[in-house]
Length: 560
Image (cartoon, rainbow, N blue to C red; front, top):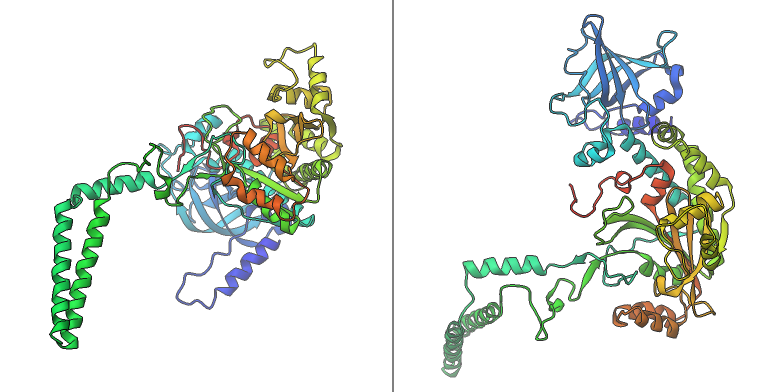
């Protein structure tokens, strides 16, 4: 396979490095299992972690179930006791690098190929009594307490491969459709959502601690200290003046001037140190003096790259950003994280209809990609977590999305009689997850795009419709998770955008650059955001968003 050829090429390229250990020509387990018995007789090097190990034949040999993360399935490895002591190899979690010959196993066994070991090259031993991941199944909740090891489990390994393939599909889709990938900043001075639930980025606290420590060790100079230093400057100045008056040598005058400059620098240092005060600096009105902060103004971790990526859309037409975003929302639900990833395309010369078309095509592309590239992992999810996971992907990938207005959606939900919603349905509410899922799972039994939402429940940058009550916004709703995508046509009219910013209770000054996009060559444009972890929840059928991101951050937890 291609990956084996690449490994061989890299190994060959390093042969000239006589002073280095030879490169490891390791074969991925995935490629071995894909070829099966066709590779029987081949000599290979395989590395991985032992899922299960058992001694047999009265300790004469051992079977190891080895997994290297390249696929969900394990490779059966047979090690004779004459090749290597068996006890250090069989514990769950042990890492091994072994060389041997691929064999076709005896008839009647489920394996299509196994490895007969001729050499054990490396062993990373495990103390079974201390290893946090026993053979018995741990709950996903318990695994969050060993986040540094949970990727060794079958579930988190499958999620990692699914997540990887969704990321690959994302870049492939946008590249195929002429989009440019733009890296937007993680540190921002703009609040995209206007919600105020942002993590602040500041050095004021660390600087205050540093100043406090410094002042304890070396107290700030007093006014008399500074006056004494100024007096020395005067004396040094007088010496220079006298030498010049006496027509002293150039060497003497230069030396005296150097002494004078040192005295002046000392005064400057003392004056600067005298300004040091313990604590966070404040202005006269009691507000924090952010002009003393690192960026000379308030800065935050971004909640979205949308505003920044719009600058590129208004020059390069079709762009997208894909990166981490942050929300300081003190929520402990199974659908919220403090750090999560967003895919955010932005399209110039595009209206709301174009935006919905792009979102529908993208979501369908992701579903098709998983069905083609992640079948084994999806079958694992079906077997262990959600029997309908593959059916759901097939449905979404092949069914045109239903499109209805927000007003129509509310009308439909108000007429529901077979279910009592926890949240009352009325025009003007932000649809809850229960409403969204009812629309897509019960009413239409397929993905739904709801558009034209009330302006009061949507962000300031969404284009105001002619009715003055709604904005050109849309949400893509899918079974299992409800809202998967949120997007809109952006407000391209300068005066209306100013009004919307002020109505949201936000100051204009931080958004002057954003308004410039409307002042200079304004263009109709649209975009959306897809919550990447929500897409993984939708695909896998897992219930908690903390289990589909490698290192979950939520209130009270930021491990590693």
